[in-house]
Length: 497
View 1 (cartoon, one colour):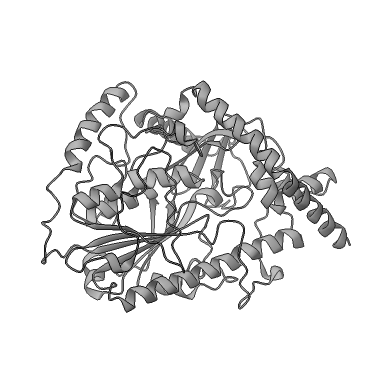
View 2 (view 1 turned 135 degrees about the vertical axis):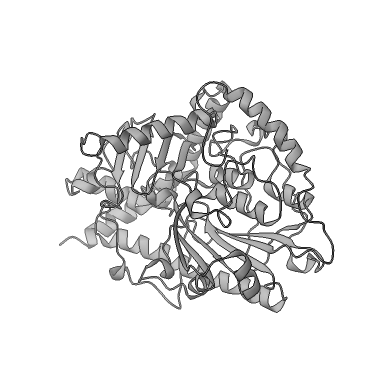
């Protein structure tokens, strides 16, 4: 597989063969023999939630992230890393399996437990493969960090990691540890020691430049700073326990920032994530990392899965991602793909493909705007939703902001080199028709190659479950929605010129 896909036709036969190969791969003896001389690296995943590359080392001058900046200084910062979905559960599902969530039928956010699908025969979560390959596996949970969140969209046993504390790890075998951090998920924490001044915030041009939007964005950046403090605690614990020797640390997010037109949407603000790989062991750095502090290659999160398994000596040829630490420049990925389907009561059904310069989005469902497709949860927690809605009613939105309240278009095409905020849809432009044709073809090829289950009709049970969720969510959050609406109205009155 590895980023290229079968042509139209035999996708079901292809998947059947693939499953047989997976069964063999999971029991593979390719991994190095376990024992006192096992020198495979320890691997740590630090997984943030809802975080775009809004860090100091990525050029944000408003936020203070010294610990993540230092980790980047001891490794590589990837500038073009992307999730496969702009919502946590679908993204995490692809990450833990190494397969696009839409290809394995686990793509809606989120199923009731009774309707969660099983994984295809022979496909097992990545940490299970690592355990079979001789690695200790831990889902770290402490009082200071690590909430243990897995949140996968298939039927699974949450106890398959087996370990949850650093002290459980033995010194005679390599380990894989994941740490889930939730600070950048709403509701934001407050950094009382280093508050972010709202007037210093740089808002995207598709938001109204208003104190309400600035305050919300400042709250997000303060949560990023608190997250950085948690990273400090993690690294300090590792040093104290002598666990940084022979260890690679991966820091990344499950998808983009929790803002309107960010999380849940296939724009850069929903899919583009920070990815840092660092080590404080010079020998490990020389063996696995280059001296290149910044890497501009296209990376998908499923490549991270393949990379981790490859570091452990496990065969990754049947995965849909490719190990990128060992990938020659001539074999770099040419495209990254994204998908979003049901998110709570909203049914998006959108797909995207991006190359180095251009992004193409196809919205199969588009009878709503970015703002009107906010879930009840968003309306209860996102002041910018109400700000856009109220200012639109007053005729006070500019051309770029109006795009968030107008119906989404069936197709979108952006020149990211000249339009990084994706403000100008070039779908009808003749200048770049060749690039558009290529991406349309590539998206079709990808969807067919992975046998995209999101193109199938949902069962009556799934449709009924998500409809019921929407009704219950609206009822349970009605007071919170009304309260936030009134707060925004008051804020608008107080800031009238």
